[in-house]
Image (tube, rainbow, N blue to C red; front, side, top):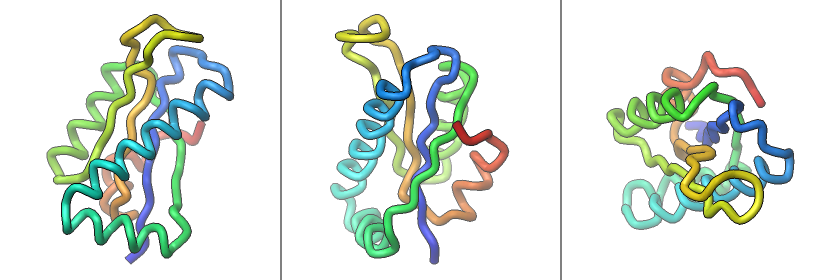
Length: 119
């Protein structure tokens, strides 16, 4: 079984590369922390770590589109996270910047996010 995380970034915000990197890291860590609270998901995290922690960052066009993919993943029982920015640097406080799905089996997450373009 091969596992990966998919990080979905809002392209409409036109964040800097550094801001995208920071927000993506927040989303990834949040998903892992959520997963570690569940025995079944914790096993996935351990396996994912042993495989090299594959991640892919893709773009979505809006907050609405981001929530659409997050809901599909949740409906399939996948761990997700949504990141809301504190507003200290680039965007207004409370702005939803990105989300993350997984780690989860590649085939499962690709059914949901496979058509999205890499950032």
